[in-house]
Image (cartoon, rainbow, N blue to C red; front, side):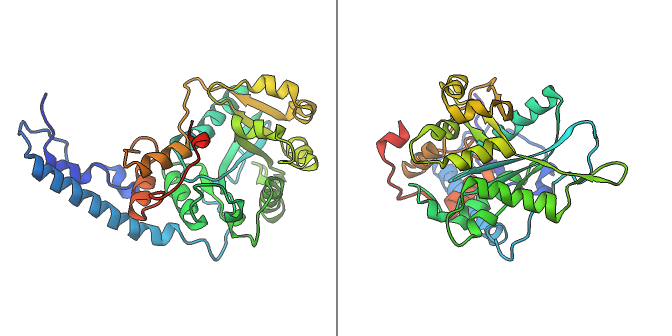
Length: 316
């Protein structure tokens, strides 16, 4: 086995920037046996530099005011008018955002392309309000920042900070109403090739665990569920080991609006969870390849989740 030159570790984990997409130097591996103390020092220096870089980046991505509805990656002109224009919204804690959260959008995109009824115009992350009070919930500014860092490599995903900026907790149906207001009232919908406009269909993107929570007594107002599923609709990403179809059949409101519920099967099962990522950070275990590098550097730079207390039931 040819060991890696310890000097190249200083650039291995640099946060993503648009300029870093191009390689500026060739990748070489030298047959040099590294000195362990030198490698440790180099690794420590590398992490320190990455932390400083992440802190510098944070000043921009953590800014949430003044509020502006994000449209930088939104498709504004529909290219296939015979299809229904669609925007997906994922509501959640995202503490932290993981590769599974990003994959949910990509799996939904694959389903949309295969199905042929919709044209995807964009996707949004909407981090929950701090008043949600969930264990392990980082501040809104940090969660918005991590979502922005994760979405920066996408050409169609965006992060909306409206929900956490509200004075109190915001119900999911109110978040969808907000997107309907911004997309269809403020922007007037999506433009067609002939210059006219039509309304955009807004749907909730959710994992199987969120959908199963619909059956938890007193957690969701029935009126809200009727509006979420009846007026908007929902894409459900199957969760490992969960039978979404069986739950849909057993839940009266879901079954009533089943024509607006689309179940997306995971062809490659992924059970990365934010809870486990937080636990790994607390235990000083690696989270690389569980979250985007830029998110990882942000967590380390700001020492997030170091002292979190997770109930055992949340991890198992």
